[in-house]
Amino acid sequence: MKLVDAHIHLSEPEYVGYLSDVIADATANGVSALITSSVNLSTCKNDVKLAEQYPTLIYPALGIHPYNVNFLKQNELQEIIDFILQQSQKKRPVAIGEIGLDSTYKTAWEQQLFVFDKMLHLAEQLDLPVVIHSRGTTDKIVDMLQSYNLKRVLLHWFSHTIETLNKSIELGYFISEGPPIVYSDTIREIVKQTPLTSLLTETDGPVLYRKNPFNGQLTKPSYIKAVLEAIAEIKNTDVTVVAEQVAKNFETFFDIKL
Image (cartoon, rainbow, N blue to C red; front, side, top):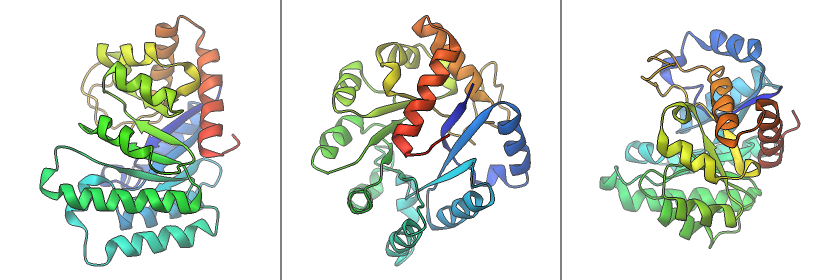
C-alpha cells in the first residue's frame, strides 16, 4: 500500500534537527512520496536541496505563501521567480506552491493579489500544477482561476462550502485533506461529498494537531495512515482501495511515477 503526503513543509524551523526522524517515519510507514511546499526564497532553496538528497521520496513545490507576502524583501519576488525558472530546467519543481490568498492578512491584500497573479502566470509559463492556500478566500480564488490556463489545481486543506466544493470538482480541481478528518465533522462531510478520484492526502506538517490521536506531537508523515482509514470509513470501502486511488491521483496531479 503506497501512502502519499501531498503537502508538508519540511524546511520549516520545527523540523530542524528532526528531519532524519521524519524521513525514517515516512519510510517505516509506507509513505512513498512527500511534496514539500515552500513559502519564501529560503525554503524554496532548502526544499530543492532536500529533493536532491532524497530524489525518490521528496519532491518540491516552490512558491510564496500569502503570509510571507508581508515580509518580502526588495527584489525577493523576482529572485524567487528566477530561482523557479532556473530549477525548471532540472525538472524541478513539480508544482508551484504554496501560493494563494488569505483573508486574515488584510494589511497586504493588494500585494497578495499581485504576488498570486505572478505565481499563477509562472505556473502557466512552466505548464505546472498549482497548490493553493485559500483561507477565507476559496470562492474568490475558484472564480479567479478560471481566467488562467492552468494545468491542474489542488485546493489544499479545503474547508469551504459544499457548493464551492461541487464547483471546484466540476472544474476538475483536486482537494486534499489531512489529520482533521479524524475529528472534524466539517472535513468529514467534505470528504463524503468528494469523489475518490478528486482526493489527495496531506499532513501540512509542522502544523500541530492537539486532538486525539495526535495530541500535539510533531506532525509526521505516518499520520497519513489515519487519514486514509478515516476516508475509507466515510466512503464505506476498504482502505487499500482508497490508498490505491489516492496514489493514482497523486501520480496524475504531480506527474510523478511512484
